[in-house]
Image (spheres, rainbow, N blue to C red):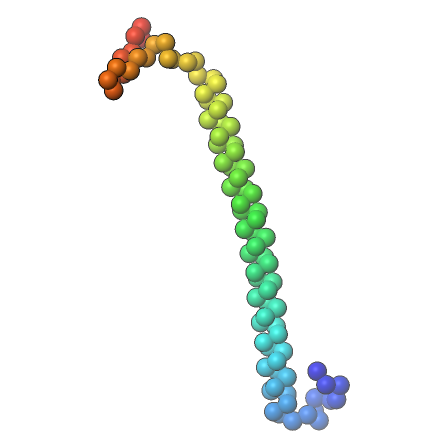
Length: 85
């Protein structure tokens, strides 16, 4: 921006400066929005990974708590037969 007083400048020059400043502002806002979305995406990805890991851990814990039933269930030609139930 010129150092001279805005009252001494012409309308055309003022409009030109306004257009330049507006485009600079819009460009900076877009860069800021992109940085914010990237940061939120990283945070969401980290959260989804933790949630998936917790789900796997829960399934493994359930498998460890349930007694194996392989000795009571036999599969013959696609049909499950339960013995000693």
